[in-house]
Image (tube, rainbow, N blue to C red; front, side, top):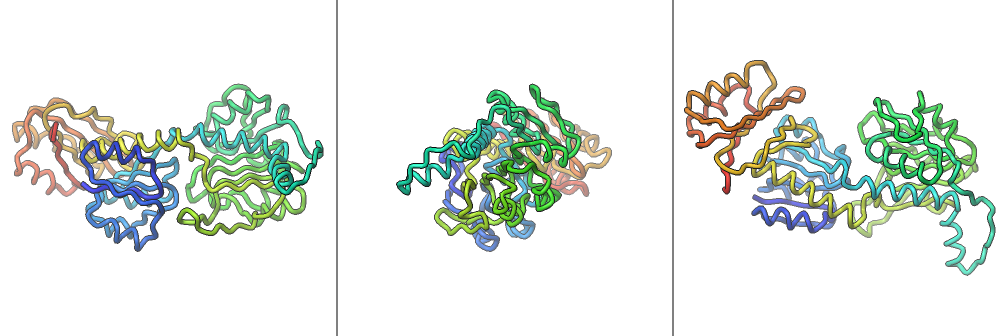
Length: 401
């Protein structure tokens, strides 16, 4: 089976997949919709990062595609509903780069508070500006975290270790870590925080979450950080509040429009502003994180293609089946209606299958059952499964194949 990996995915992913018998093509940049469709002919597994969009049109044009691996945290670049409807599994790395993102944010908080970016630029220009003006310790300052998930909670812990007070806002019910305090509203957080750091996901409802109204609510001379999603922030509004002096500094790692490939031109209304740190979407781009992500997602892709395992899939029912050590396996993705499992087992019994294990999960409109047996099902039995009105696909695997 062929694999296409885009956007400089770590070479360890190639090693993992080739060791499992896949033919891997690795490309440095992202691809537009038409280019991606052309490249996906005959491809079973696709690996992307955040800059390649897998649309319904792409999925329709890729009948051989079994799964998409997002070698990052976010999955909003994939049409998850369209992928699920076509039985294409989508995997990501929800935990592998959280520490890298958190360390970047901590570094930016300190750099902005001490205005290190400006000091460094002056030194490179030959100007010795030894002054404490505008420089502050972060100890005793209040950090407001918007989005208290995996990254937000790790940031909360490290910020407290630095002596910061932590407050957070999240629409979900989250357990506060350490001495962090939940704010009832976003507005309450903005009015109390000396530093605001965004860590929300890329769901459509978060587009434009932070604009002129939210910046105006922030404390005078506060700091702003976005290492979440570019489309969340109105950068023109941020520019206005930085130029006016209301916001004392900002650090952004993500942008509404990002260059597709290494070396492409970058445009932003935030370029050239004092005490503004701009980085090219490198929050999770440490050697440690990228290697871990490459290993993790490649393993999930291989496990699905070769054994039908869907644990941690973000769009299909997540079946935590064990590795296939012996015998044969049948994977049956179906419409989630009552009685399907009973009919499947009746068919298996009629075919004389000696079942050694069975695993089922449902998610929304779909159900997925994995059945292990000592002998392979006959072609007639498989044809009956595939011909059922509720079947989306049926696949088989054999140990050692």
